[in-house]
Image 1 (cartoon, rainbow, N blue to C red):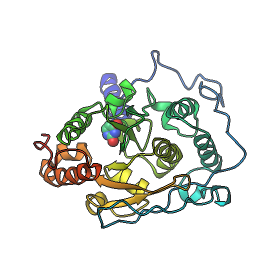
Image 2: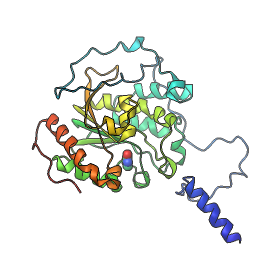
Image 3: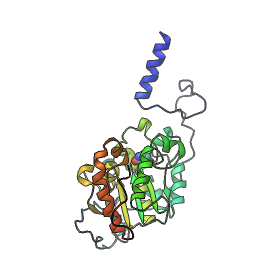
Image 4: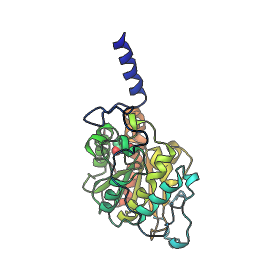
Length: 301
Ligand code: URA
């Protein structure tokens, strides 16, 4: 009987997403003194006094294959801070995330800031920060959704089954991880791989935008619906967004970056019939990159 109760308690925890041990030793939380804060590194000091402008401008689809016309950057000092309520997060977190991200000049600055950032509760349940993999000088950046179990264990994006398919998708257009930068919309694994909440997405967004600004790529590939909707600031789902060119821009960028959404490899593993459309999208991306074979080799399956 006691065993059955324990089993159903365990099942309940797994269904709720608590499927990974995050410490070496169990902790009796009822014994901890009330109000004791979780043991974490101190928050990174906010950088600068000014809150930088937030978000990128909503992306517009660009039907022509030519790169979007450059537009002058918005005056950053005059732009208002993000509306935290609209962004779905508490005001101090919103301001801190933008301030901290704005002060970063390199990906290593962002990684260091994320290691002590306390604005995203996912950091408390994740094993590792999962930030970037690949080449910081890449001409093309791939942005996925969020780390899964394998990524959480290794601290690297796209190293599980979906990542292996992503590697084959890259190879089909003559690319590998040494030529691209791979990152995510969220930097910590949501427990049990549940969908990220709008607040979690909003908290990471300043860091995602700053990462793109620092890399200054020629092409942005948004892998899956979460990345597409977040970075393009669009409501449509991935079925509508994929395969079209959009212009992604933030107020600190000197020119917009052409961005295309593609199906997520995890979705392709479940729905292989959609690979054909994805391979067409990859051909478009390769053409725009302009330096290789016209057609991908194979279907990456
Ligand atoms: N799926 C993602 O979107 N990102 C990863 O890093 C792994 C799986």
